[in-house]
Amino acid sequence: MKFDYKKIAPEIFRPIIPVEVGFNNFFVQYEVLVDSGADLCIFDAEIGEILGMKINSGKPQKVAGITGAQSEVYYLHKIQVKVGGHEYKIEAGFLPNLNSRYNYGVVGQKGFFDLFVVKFDLLKEEVELKQRQ
Image (cartoon, rainbow, N blue to C red; front, side):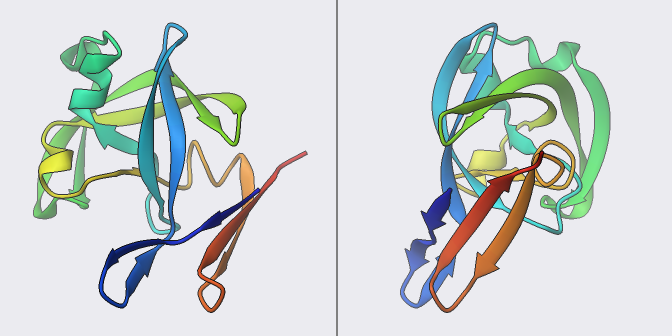
């Protein structure tokens, strides 16, 4: 599967791809940054609420980096994610107010890079995903 980078500002392109995030087989479309430096997948808590999740019932964890210098609490939940029409069961974090900083979630090592071999091509402005066997 190949996805074009998304233009987010003049001369700035990022590997942001469309996915569907699901809980109890109810899905919503969402854009995510493919981030090799992220340890796991993190989505805005609002997405989880739209899916009918009780965000604070998840396992609380702390994260910094995506939030700036100060760490913040996110909540881990088992969810479904569809990429290119293929469905996967993963564990992802839901972080309150992520969308106030970014208009997309983040997919990282656990829950994404463990499912795909990922090839970034900056000159072609595309990211290619190959499902792991």
